[in-house]
Length: 170
Image (cartoon, helix red, strand yellow):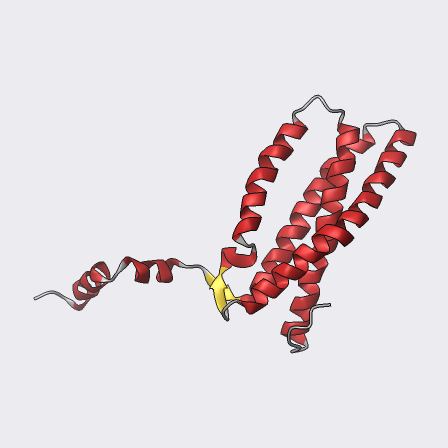
């Protein structure tokens, strides 16, 4: 006769693979998906802008100032007309998800595909002969836009988790 531990192992071995997938799913409360998404956008934004800053400091001061201001202006435009809507759509998608969702669902599948293209493209640009101060404009624009849009995730989390307000994103 098998012990209770052996019976439990046999029971788990006989369970369908779907059950195993559900048990291994790193599910979290959907409010935490907002925090994870915000942290990712903040982290990537800071990484890109810090790379840009390093490249700009190597340029002559007038060029550095001109390209830095240009990057900031582009980051505001990219934030307003690009990343803001993406963040709002992500927040709505997250909030419409089940109460507990996979940790990796903070980003839509389409977003992961875009990331899979952007990472090699960024590496290609970084290793290209393009002068780094000029590349800093693009990195500042994308990094600054991501950084600014990340605060929408935190604001929505604050409204939901701390003030108990429902979905009325901006």
